[in-house]
Amino acid sequence: MLAAGGLAPDHSRWICWRRSFFLPVKVLSRVFRGKFIAGLKSAFQSGALQFHGHLLPLTEPCAFASWLRVLFRHDWVDSKRPFGGPEHVLRYLGAYTHRVAISNSRLVALSEGNVTFGWRDSAHGNKKRIMTLPVDEFLRRFLLHLLPRGFMRIRNFGFLANRRRAELLPLCLRLLQPSDQPAVCAASLTTLLAQSTRNCPLCGGTMQVIERLSAAQLLLRSPPPLSRCAP
Image 1 (cartoon, helix red, strand yellow):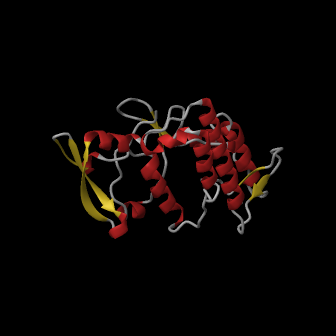
Image 2: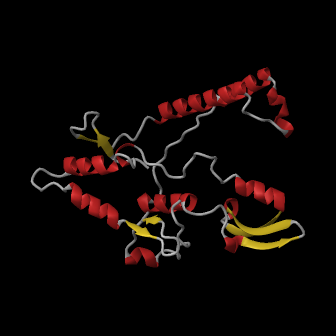
Image 3: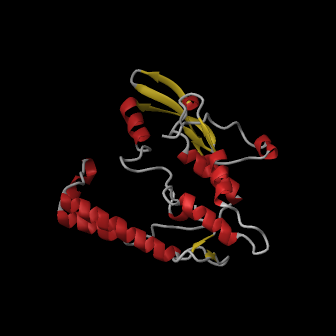
């Protein structure tokens, strides 16, 4: 998610976004695609890529180069208007950033080396269905949801980056404050940030508030999953 504006390079003013413009989607798509394919080429040349099964022919440089050329025929980034507003976006992203790949309630049985679990068929009205997989295949699919070493699910950049947040957030609030109202002091902001974090009663680790809901919103939502401690 992006802020609706940002600081000028010299930090002298706040630059608001234009309502008719979000970001150059086509340019972003081509740059992302180019950098990703360049990374694949570098990994191939250094021998970091491994190919198995039906991908084994890609070990040949000519076959790999031919396969890469096909990737340039597609756009890799798409941008659409949100369907349900910011609350819908938060609920959607929360399912990926603060939950495991599959909850315990969906696990049905483990017997004879097979795992049986429930899933929703989105292609047929989200009907609940049952699937059984061998243990090794179930674990393979589950591990696809684990991030590689060094990656993080949530990372803040710019004036929200951890190292500069205490310095730049008060500046942003001061620049956004109307001229006829007193500016918000850094001490007040620090207090506000401190109030938005709590300690886990089990391990003592820091827990951060991701979304605040009113009483009316809580009545419309199903009970949230158990909170997990921040790493």
